[in-house]
Amino acid sequence: MTADFKALEDLSKRYLRFAVVEAQGNSPLYERLAAFISHSPEILQFLASLPADRRQPNLFLAAVRHVAGVLKDGDGLAAVLRERAQEVRQVILSRTTQTNEPARCAVLLPLLAQLPQPLALLEVGASAGLCLLPDRYGYDYGTTSLRPAGPVRHRLPVFPCRASPTTPVPSALPEVVWRAGLDLNPIDVHCEADVAWLETLVWPGQEDRAERLQEAIGIARQDPPPVRRGDIFEDLETVASEAPKEATLVVFHSAVLSYLPDQRKREAFATAMIQSRAVWISNESPNVFPALARQAPEPRAAGNFLLAVDGTPVAWTGPHGQSIDWIAGAGPEA
Ligand SMILES: C[S@@+](CC[C@H](N)C(=O)[O-])C[C@H]1O[C@@H](n2cnc3c(N)ncnc32)[C@H](O)[C@@H]1O
Image 1 (cartoon, rainbow, N blue to C red):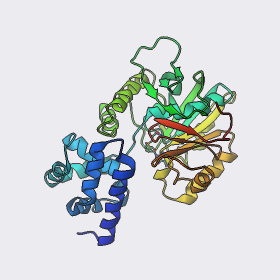
Image 2: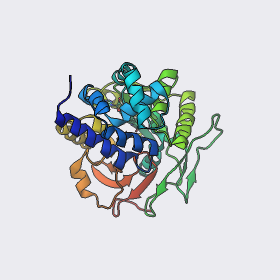
Image 3: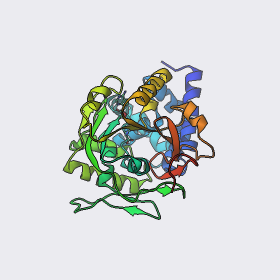
Image 4: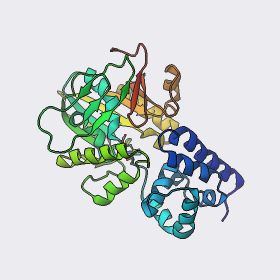
């Protein structure tokens, strides 16, 4: 069955946007491939034949890479799809984009450090739970660097994060006494196939990021953070009720709520969070809470996430935790 013209046009725009907004400056290969796809009727037809929630550039490009390795150009991509479309389809239908980016801990840290310690961390949409270990990694903010105390038995990832001058970069790591994750499909750090998929989700050209992901997985394997199978709406309260009362409960999420297309559900979640006893940290694309984004001053770089605490925007952040630009007047500044 051939897709209608409108569906193909929408897909073309989506891939072109991915090329120029998301991939540009981050992965030259994905920028080229996504631009090629946006002009390829053959590949757009393939994408249109997938369920609507399985057409994302990130998922398609990772699936092709999982099947055929890193390709050189669009012609190579078209050839793979002609010869191995069923295999690519199979990966797309059996996996989701669960990119777990531990570097995002670098942008959470300025907020975590300001809270009364110790902390109980609950991450919704945790994937493998690598963002639940902010106290076990190293960070380099340019002017300040932080490392966990005590011996490290595994190679330590050190996440570089460009911090704007007013960002309250912490001088110590937080004290975490309890942690738990919730995910529709938890990734097991001890499962080779799961880990291979996580690694495939890191874009070509970002080898440093891939190396730090492997290091973070090594840290997590020593004492994996518990990530429970469950839904953000159905199961959050139950998990939260298990957190120790004497610790500051922090519920956080990054790159998760864009998977919930229903804006009313997002708003209901936000209301429940504000009314809860937990400190709520959201690190999401600004499209997720447009009203919050309107409160945050421009300029910000294209593709940046908005970091907010209890419904108040505090910083623009690089989507992979690579930068943090504190918003003037958003609480204690450096
Ligand atoms: C892109 S990953 C982000 C992982 C992690 N938060 C990070 O920043 O590295 C999004 C995760 O959210 C999970 N997810 C999506 N919708 C969910 C829901 N309704 N309830 C729980 N988890 C969900 C997905 O399974 C996926 O693992």
